[in-house]
Image (cartoon, rainbow, N blue to C red):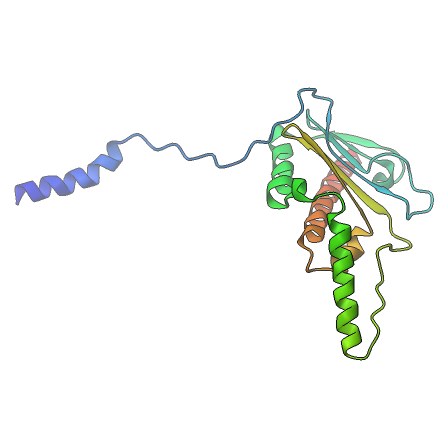
Length: 196
């Protein structure tokens, strides 16, 4: 009986006496360029808008400096700063959660063309003719996203990203690129609002 009580007490006390286990830091840390002024994230739109301002819509540098272009600020570029942790969160969102480096050049065009063919075939089977709306989307700009991290630099261009993501929900990369674009837009609006 005494042996049983001792065993129970040991089971209860040993976890209390043991040093706390370090929580595993499962957050991926992406390597940034060594130059603190190097552009890590670059986002801009090309064409599609009359009187469009030249330059990036948003740039984030390795030191956390954020530049929001005049197209999103109503006239002049605005500069702000984010923490290293916030930059890492952006990179995890783009690279890990949304597989930005996994979008190969030409991949989206091939997937959209296949989706359009499938939509046309499905429409013609019912007697109606499906008319694809794009791309190209006549009034839409081309979204250009570039990320430099982990010793890589990757750029993706997608004309009419908003419309393409809406029209082709079966293509995950379009939704992922749109999610990245929306996260960058949120950051741009936050930086611009802080400057007012």
